[in-house]
Length: 206
Image (tube, rainbow, N blue to C red):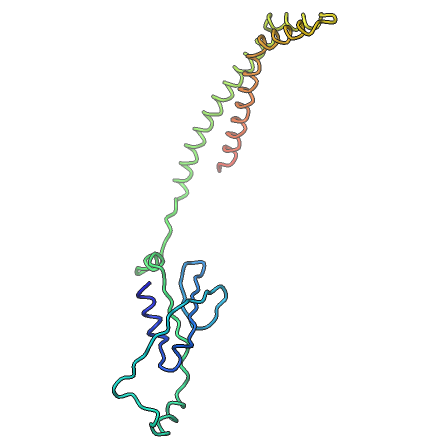
């Protein structure tokens, strides 16, 4: 930053107008920094201390001939000084004798990778479908559990049960059906996994 400030100060220093010069700093989307004495959209004003200038031994005084002043007036006005600093990373990326090339994967290599991925997904899909079938089989057996069937029948056959009897029947049904809820949750998770694997397989190029 010290180097940038010195460069801007030298380019903008003028014995007659330094005190009135306003410096703007602008950073674009690529990280390039621009310093200028003209307002820019999105730029911020830098709060800089004025630069003092000391005339050299041979500097003309106020009593210089009018001819010299006339020559100075005929000179074209100096263009606004702008210092553009390119970030080091961007400058390094553009260095070299030729254009920058981006590494790409050839078609055969990509196809080979897709084939490997497809085979892995197909194996995972087969395993998940097998596990889901086993879970559904266990769930069917639990629903035919004699203890559960008996508890349900007792609750159905009860005529005007007392609150205590109702609580006992609910507890019996909960005990007998406890494993069913766990199997139902497992089956739902396996179904989600199967759906996700099929979606991945569908995204692979043939």
